Length: 318
Length: 272
Image (cartoon, rainbow over all chains, first blue to last red; front, side, top):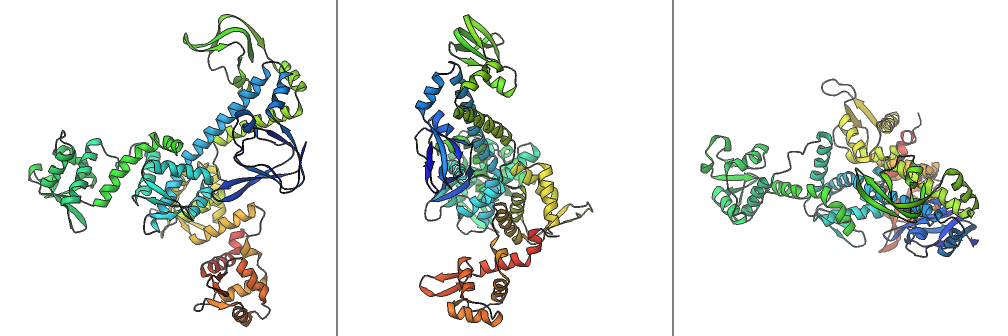
């Protein structure tokens, strides 16, 4: 039996001693690292068993355990486990191992699902926080606290999710005294949030998602606007000639036709002068639109499918 | 449960072999634990000897196992059940805190669409309809929310957040209560409260020495002493100036938070 006094540490988060402990007497405090701070995550008391993952799966301890009073714990090492199982039928250790593995799989699945389920709240909060800052950058700490209250996702898990988002090329984390996040496009969190919410309510793909052809048109519009565009009445104008030239340069194999513009004009992403509906396509002189909104839309179109396909991968990579 | 003592089994489905189960394997553990049918059919791949492990046999072995091993098995089984249940449950600590914080962040300068906001919240947090309705009722009872008819006369269609700023304070109060702690503004003595109210009238000079602050507070509360000043520094209502440690700066944002909490104490505490 191992005896601990108040404030003694039974094991430290991250240590790999592969032992299991059964608490016989006293309370221990669970402490978890969150950045440079330690957070108290509750207590374990008599009859609790800790370190199952360490003994059965050779995993480092996921938290620090500190005695809050005089504590008695029974220590079980790999050798103890082996000695005990040798005296039992040959099939018995397998039961133990299968049960432990099952628990581990459930735990990992829950951790993954928790992060996925927290994504809408994270985007909702990012959209709220970014509204109140000037440079599309804000401190993460208060937002992480809010996420914990609203959704329950922990600090480290939130960082994993944020790193996943950054892995999709939408933002970057800025280390420093207070870690910050910088979104490359200020409106993107709100757009992604609204798109996900629309998907939930309508079960249909919302209008804001573009076909491949529409995306090529908007990409060419952005390119033409950058070099040849001019501002007028709060919109960015490009001549039809410059637009077509940019389109053919970027997508030489594709046709610059009326049909591919129809939905974009109908949805109000692009406009033409003279009016698209009343004139022959070849006689259109200018195309115009809100350049920043078009850029947001193209970025939304790029990132939205990645949330389903790549976010998990990006989180794992991070 | 079956233990393959000798031979080889095959798991199959529609006559297709899914996997071979060699000697020394144990099958059916998950089925027994979950009370679910076997996921696939099993047949002998070659002559095999199996050991059937029934409850009686398992019970006899468990009796011979050391106490720590029984405790470990119990713990694993209990954790597994909890994890299964938790997978479908919201992750937050308190539904009222979660809903109040969500509303604080969702607030706009106009009434919210009740149905839309509730739908959005339930989607974000996987909260049940019952839990959300309970939280909503509680916020109405504490007079944080008023429901109004919509433009078309539909009852309760609009949600008016009475003072959105107070929602953050409510969440802090609920969190302190959940941890068995005193919410700092409500732990102030009558003398400290009176000093705080007086500080709320301050609108020009925010930096003074300790002695000057004390004199200032004594104008309204003659019993104010240096302990009040020290306590306000601890609570962050006053802060020390790094460039001039002798002087204290009045943190008006914190003061405002304390006063808001005190003025709405009745509602925040939920005293009817």
